[in-house]
Image 1: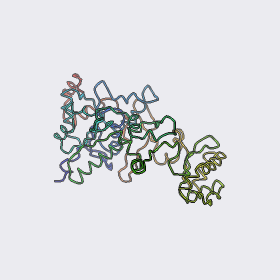
Image 2: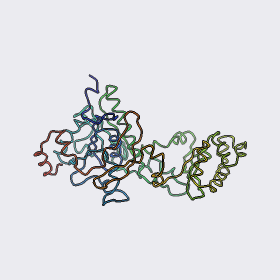
Image 3: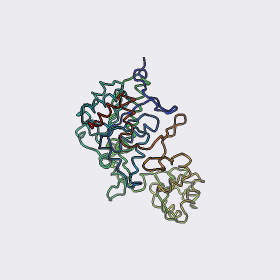
Image 4: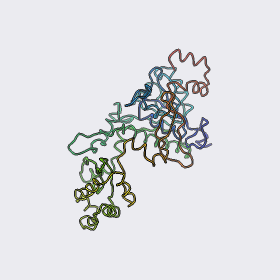
Length: 412
């Protein structure tokens, strides 16, 4: 008997979905853990999201804008998920969670380390219930180490992990990206860990295991060669504004119609083509700029020439001319620009959906694109407890009377 037989999938799912038959029990709130759950659900996993009765995920109220009195983040973050209510602080709720975990492939949580253990739902307890279980744990600093007990938010993790410092301009306060980048990075690493653990279990004959993701480490992992640079040369990487290191020319340039475009030509052949398009072929023939190092030293002169040319044309014309010449370029898009972008439309990255509270709306599409088992969007983020009857009744076999008692007692 293989591990795939021992820990067989438990649920019928639409055909031709890569994760059909994988059941995920999602506990936790806000961004990092639930974002990983969303990504799993988009590729067919049955994701059961647990919320406390009367105290739903705060993300239901987060977001900059409202429509019909509702925020918009939840509809995207929790699409394709089944929502149940369950009080994990009470014995009966913990027993029900263990029973759900016994029937699941993955438990995904992002509480502060130690929380699940206090509820009798830590790794050791759940592994004993279900040896095939994969438990993915997302936290600020990880499950071990002297700072593991601290809470973690994306803004702090990006700073501690070194990502914030190298952003922005020298001698200015380090800015952040306009999103919760540290959370999203941690979610993607959690997804990577879950998929790796599923492969180990189902294809290689292993058992379940714990996946431990720290927001700080997810941010730190993006620092490219900064670690050996410091170790071997003592170079402490500094912020560089809108450029990166020795990649010249590669920067943003303002156009005649006051838009920003990115032009990247930091390779010999591309550099020569760019200089031809902007009418400065003599710069490509100049021996000073014949090497990567030379172009870096001549950054101000080269990017000054490009900037002077860019100011004479509108962004769309620059994009057309450089694309035709094989020079990587692109506008710095706002969301309104993306809505008009034919490439995003052609790739199904703007998808029409319906929500019972929001009505019809456009949602971001699924990434990546799989040729044989593509991800798909089935429903918008549902109200709290929408799937209580289905999960507790069909999955655990509780009848209506038992469910009514649990609801009356505040367990679900």
